[in-house]
Length: 364
Image (tube, rainbow, N blue to C red; front, side, top):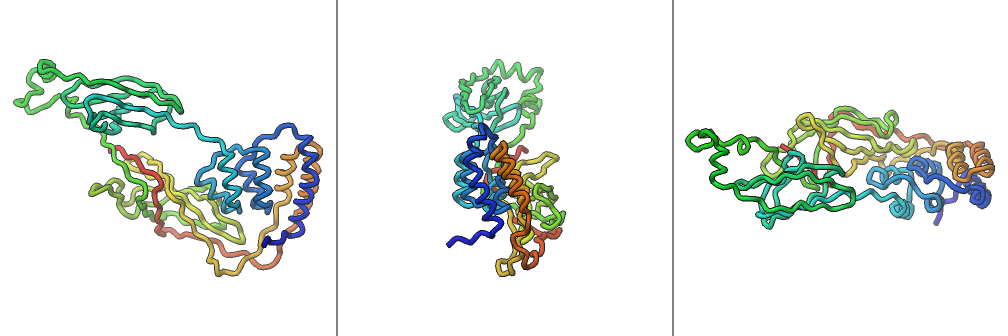
């Protein structure tokens, strides 16, 4: 069963369908729809099926990710519309891949002077998290000469660093020690062997991070995109090792607040701060919505002027102007009964759990 459209909304659709054939002939080219335009159409009660038709005709200019899908769902997108948007979204350029092939295995691999990982026992390692451009690669194994080379990585392409490490002869070790400073009697080893090197620790996907709000959030006051401060409520550990201490800074972003009749809150944890450096976080968003048992509130007036502007822009020319005027002039509420629902809020000191969707790389 389909819900009957209010008469003003039905009039908008009829007007647009009448003008559309003429607008297609008048319109030679039109830029793809932006995320904001798609959301505005949905929020102003243009059916998902009609929006899907428009995006298939004109395309879209934005990529689809978890944050974008959340905003579209809140605006009222159907599963069919989301599937169409995923199909039409510009595909992100694949990251470059650096393949390591070294003999013997078990060597340490440094990228831009930071320890990345060790090769496997057969000397293999795949690195797919580097940015395009030049990177200095150093491969080190005790008892062998370091291998160092600059490789230029290109997006979507794979580069292989292949080498066989050369054994250090005893005469070379003696010259390295120099004046007995590197000898066992001297109690010291050369600086290249004792220099502290960063260790790479990975916080795995699926880890639950609990944060405690520092700021309060209010759906009636705060807008999507606003950032909020929080603190890590309990240490984050890997095995028996504490990686992120309690009270480390956390940064949240407000993704959406719903609408006056159905207020909600959706927050995203996007960074943690460790030793003054921000760690990027990909976590499942936290959502808070009104109690389903609560009495439905009145729907706010449809912003017909906004919808008219978008649809008129799609049509272009004289037909577009006529659509904009016809729809924009009908800017009356579609429902004036009932009252707005109370806003959704989060008080300071509220604890929120986030689940990592991807791992976090920490250099110690």
